[in-house]
Amino acid sequence: MSHATEKEQAALAAVAEQVLQLAKAQGASAAEAAVSEESGLSVNVRLGEVETIEFNKDKGLGITVYFGQRKGTASSADFSSAALEDAVRAACSIATFTAEDPYAGLADAERMATEIPDLDLYYPWDLTPEAAIAQAKVCEDAARSYDAKISNSEGASLSSHAGTRVYANSHGFIGSYSTSRHSISCSVIAEDEKGMQRDYWYSVARDGKDLEAAVEVGKKTAARTLQRLGGRRIDTCKVPVLFAADVAGSLVSHMITAIRGGNLYRESSFLLNKLGEQIFPEFVHIHERPHMKKELGSAPYDSEGVATYARDLVRDGVLQGYVLDSYSARKLKMESTGNAGGVHNVLIEPGELDQQGLLREMGTGLLVTELLGMGVNTVTGDYSRGAAGFWVENGVIAYPVDEITIASNLSDMFMQLQAVGSDVDYRSNIKCGSLLIDAMTVAGT
Image (cartoon, rainbow, N blue to C red; front, side, top):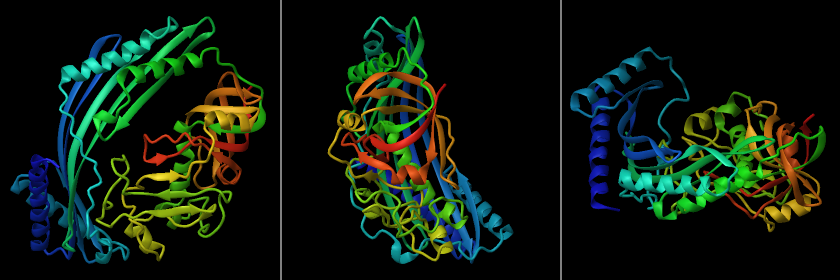
């Protein structure tokens, strides 16, 4: 890590410690502070012209104080001593008006991260606006010149962000780490006598050197868009559905939402009381790996300072654990799982077959490449979403389809999972290959 970052971390840590001391002086029985600083550059080009150049430099502080079981929270973007005093005073004042909550408080002291591993998350990119614009233009040009049917563009963008965050609390815990995130994306429109279609592609990484080449992102955007031309509607039917890797992760995210502490203690989840029960076929293994190097979801501790650790969520198809912060854990008479602020790198273990192999296995059915709308009910598991993709016959893509709806229930979809693809999409916090579901209702004409 660079010397500059160590200085930044020390400066932010000093702010956090000052705030905790102020809270103690005001009589708070416990307190926690999160301090962050981020800077970045984003550029957008469209039809070869620069549309926007945006620089940002943000900093922020969140302070939570506890007077016994009463809690107050305040925030500030100003780190001057007077502003910090004001923020602490405001938090303390709010705490005097709140009701006592027997579950409120810091995470348990013994769960704090004692070692903070370096997870290789910080790769600042010394990118000038000119260089960023040049890359975005290369990306868009590659897409626009790919084929005469590419008639218009929604543009290409490149962004680069880096920052440092510090979390400290009155258990004596103080932790800090720096992260970076860079991305390039493109979206274009293709047109033929039957109409217009749009599609996009993007690449994202901790290290700018790990991004897909701008030319490749552009070409992939164009190829994906052209494939969708001539989309048809199909007759309503019940068929196997293969979710492409870049949309399949959403099914895993619905499972994670259903096993979050907040939804469980409110009893608003279709997976309520399913711990230790089979929710997927036996071959399914879903696990959380927070300490993967360089990955977008990695974190040494959660937003309460609790150490993150590798664990199974589903093993042999059986639900092994929930996703809990300390508040929901206390409500459920359980222990925090280090998930305050969310999950960290959830993987569904891949199978042997790539997408082509899964299409052959499916035979006839629907390949879904885009999902629209949010018709998912976490309470009942009912699932109904607009979709687009390709009709498949004898394991081969026959033609594009659009303006359809796919429907089922998540409990049934999970149990009817036939296979997980080897084509894992690593671009998000949920790393998942294509997912083949035995049967869903596809509503068309």
